Image (cartoon, rainbow, N blue to C red; front, side):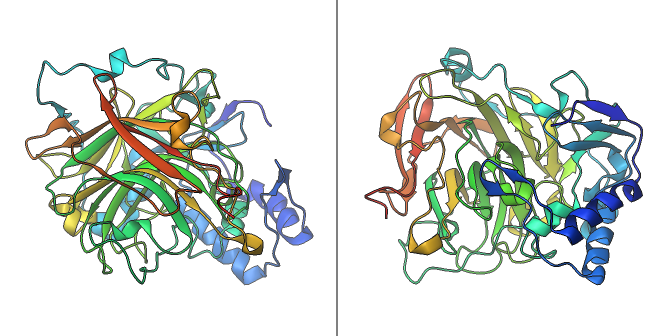
Length: 433
């Protein structure tokens, strides 16, 4: 691990000798038993294509900060960020006036956050734990490297979720997004065809173990609209994830995602393609979160709010109590340009079934829902944003888990945590072979 540091700008050419050595000599780094740099023979043409792509998404930095965890954070002028390269955003003007945050409908409703036990007050991002941050007028962007790309199946798939194949049969009232392609879930969700303008929840942060490089474990909110059995599903997503393939380590990281065509060609994680407009100079999407919850001890959580600005129509993301991170412009979407029709909250893992066995990749804390507070992971204070930009506790939610012997979910309600649930599991075990 390096020490935190900062320097003006950067020259990608300085990084090339190291990358050539790593790529062509077959050296690799082993962390926590996983090979995080999947070596493969790389020809000069492919290497050149990777370099061109990295030059496109790694914008020139006003300031560079070297994080103690090995990340490099580039402070990029907000008008030069990747979002504005999107063809639909050529004439987009960055929204300067913050949107009105949704408020609880009933002033008499208890302030859940102020009464919840063991709040994650100490949560921070590792890259500025020493007080360093990006200057005003810039946004922090985690720099991508050749090795990040090489861990992906291809340059085209770098930064993307795999498209999900439709199941042969499913419950008619369940969302299609929770099925297919080796992905398993434990989620709560609203009814189909509701009019929804956003969602909020507070999510427990853990560091689940991942069995294989190409598997991940995440906990997130989905805001959805469009056809659940077609190719035009719009989705906005945010939460935390552990993904060795994407990030090269096993740290939980704040992430975002979006797609307008059921994960086929549009959208990506974080800022790895154009689209999401970052406005905050202190929050780096894709950067590690610390500390994490521990069994029987302190519990740390993050609050995520996604909502549609009633004036300009952009979908904003809030982090914590009052921090605005940025927004997904309305121009990106078809169905979500109007409103959402479903919200999901919960966990997702990739089960690649290596050697014919269920993965031992953990969801949440790796404990089942019935283990409760201090052991199982949770989502608390599930809330919905209505058409009048007001928040209300999510009512009449349904829950779904494909294989409850591997991962499960149990929902409840009380005055402090509102609508909430525990979820997760260890994956492979005697009942989940």
